Length: 188
Image (cartoon, rainbow, N blue to C red):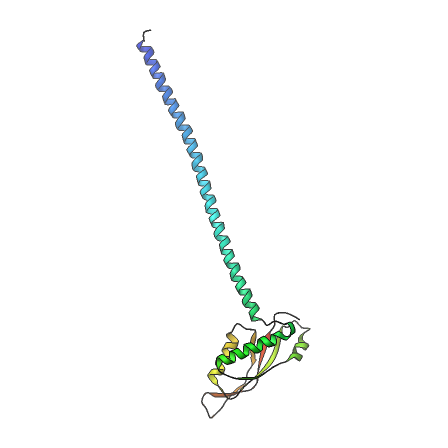
């Protein structure tokens, strides 16, 4: 069989067209497949970023919750327990500790439980107490004592205080009994 040059040329042109079509089809299919893969990768990237954001939000909320637990614990320490006069023991211990740190002597603490009974029907959770300290006292020691009470993590507030200067010593003063209020953690 003899090959006719025109037939051979037609076959070659047909093969070239076929190869070009096959290449174009392969390119088109590959391009579509790559586009799908890129879209999937972009979706995964967005999902990962979203998950990372959610993870950061959860961690932030957990930190805030732990901080609130600390605040709750501190608030419980600020209020004296109301049950069975334990607040008196806690208050006595707190006042004694502050007096020792300040270098003064507390002679007596009297709780006004009658005042508590009068106010028990009201929505009050505080009890007054009278505190007597040894006189004369150094002004700066008294000031330190007052600061410890007022700034300490405690359930006590000074509500009445009367001081007089003693003329013989420059820093010594006389303190009459002063009144404190003890805040309790709930109604009895």
